Length: 103
Image 1 (cartoon, rainbow, N blue to C red):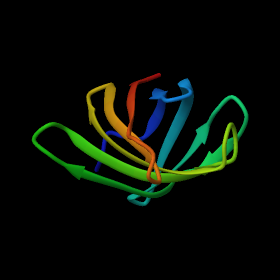
Image 2 (cartoon, rainbow, N blue to C red; image 1 turned 60 degrees about the vertical axis):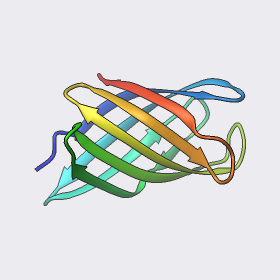
Image 3 (cartoon, rainbow, N blue to C red; image 1 turned 180 degrees about the vertical axis):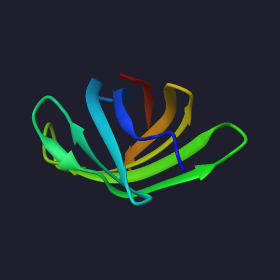
């Protein structure tokens, strides 16, 4: 069982500025799914994985966006209580810092 299901308000610090999105994770029969809602589009989260670490719950997922640019993003964050921190990466571009809170 994981504490990740729910809605999280995330901020990504990217080379083109701060981008905000809302991630909603749901769990049905032990399987996590989710969607990301940004300013311009809603996209599904793929390959969601949660592992317990000494720091908290490590959550990874992938998502593809088309706005503001067409990118495939990989997220790797750690959730502790109602906060998340980590990074996302779009291909060979530098990592972007990710932080967030449960809403």
